Length: 196
Image (cartoon, rainbow, N blue to C red; front, top):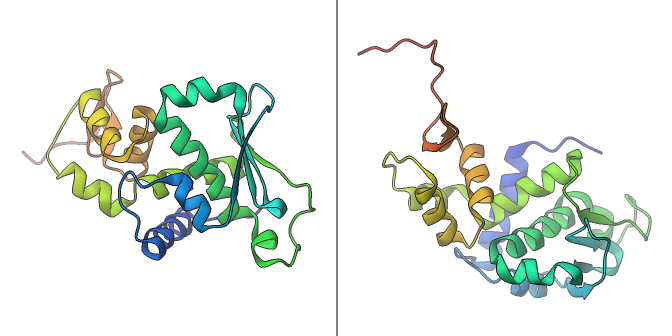
């Protein structure tokens, strides 16, 4: 498994925004169609939300989790974007037709494990659903505190509050204060003095 810098992950997601002229809340299923990736609802292991079989160009979504997805559109969108991340970050052989990287049965699944490939696919999903330039514009640079603003931003991108907060932290636009409450900007080290 190769290290993929965060800047490259962001760039790959941004390329899709440019290529397909995406906008906030874009239809992720339509993006799968543009990418010629099939979507299949099927029974998977309980802990797995979805998986991609690169050489079949197929994303399988866990039918057993359909109610959860129906109740949380942000989770569904993030899950599909996560699998698209595997497609662009880890399945070069399947995309190019060379078959050099993985055998024909290779699967990448979203099951919550924190492997480097899963972390990279998570970062890609966040960048795809909420690119830096769109998040900065939506935040409007004003200071805020609490889950209400995170929820507002999550609504603008059809993401879950948690995924939006993680994305804001990745972009260094938010942090968790000493009370565990989301707040805008970077965390300030309490040992750091003030110029005022």
